[in-house]
Image 1 (cartoon, rainbow, N blue to C red):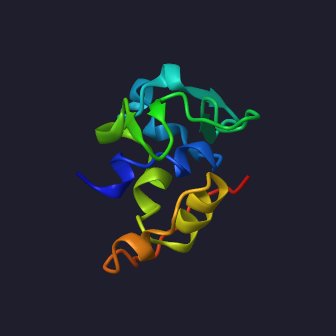
Image 2: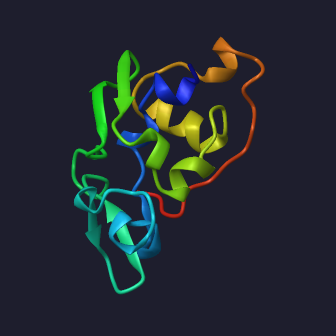
Length: 117
């Protein structure tokens, strides 16, 4: 299992905006019930603009035991953020988790998300 399926820090740190074309009602794979409309072209994962931030698809406790209810169908920005990237490490630090580089020296790929909070 990847670090991304165990940690959850990014899912509780970043706003996730994506194209409305990724919604299942528009031929995509992201469940429409988990998104809110931003404008005619963009939607956002529910919970990612709340305080405290937490994606509605995330279950469990950050850094211990988490799962994404739509991991296979998550939007593109979630695919782009990689374990060990700068964004990953910042999210982990926000939640008091150690850097992946200190746990697994091989996790150094880069990635990004569409919007930061």
